[in-house]
Length: 82
View 1 (cartoon, rainbow, N blue to C red):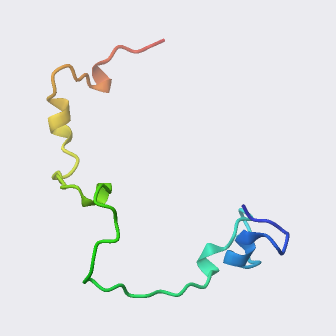
View 2 (tube, rainbow, N blue to C red):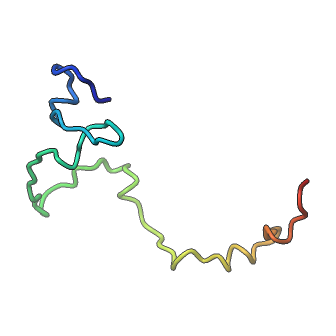
């Protein structure tokens, strides 16, 4: 949370600038240092991290497959509740 106190930790990260509409820290104006990581070396993620699992991408949303499932009812086929 942003604070008016100079000692607040978030103000050390973002500085005194705030978004005028929301009164939240102005992250877009925060200075950062970027470093290009090398591709060689060990994976820093643990072996059980979800990002290391085999991926099964699907081709788009596939709504037709959803509509063909047994028991699926289209919203337009349901009776109106009143």
